[in-house]
Image (cartoon, rainbow, N blue to C red; front, side):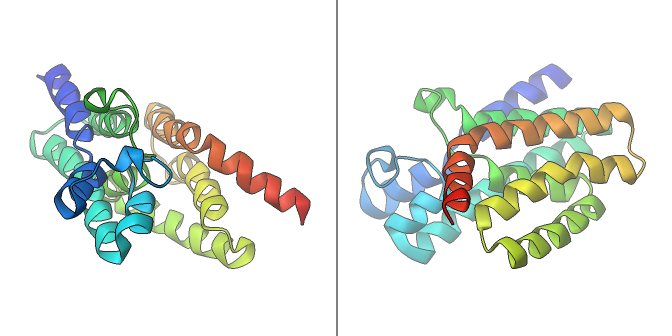
Length: 190
């Protein structure tokens, strides 16, 4: 049953909010517009605040529902994290869109809040502090996400739980690698 739930979580991740919102609002394929990314940022650029909010909400709900479902079914904390990994992987590499999806931030954030809100609150504080200093949403966000496994470690979660959380974050960092290279390149120029 756990294997089937993790597989189902991957397919929940395949439900691309930006794709659906763009089709509904404009009748077009978001992959052929703007940056071509199937995420909230591109939807916001193309559809405005309403498109951004609908997409972000849909993506957050994927993470929330998958982790809540795992909790409801009584799966261990480790398997709850596995379901989060699966939904994030499904969002980043959806089979339904030829493995070209979004970046996974909103989906991961939704799942991380439900998984354990205390580490997420610490993450939020770190993010806001980094944002105030760097004035870069991408750099602050990715740096703050990188701290999450360490936050779990300092809050006495097991090594296995910390490693699984690190896997979630590694997928997010990998999905953002081009953004990070671009952002870091701009910082060097300054």
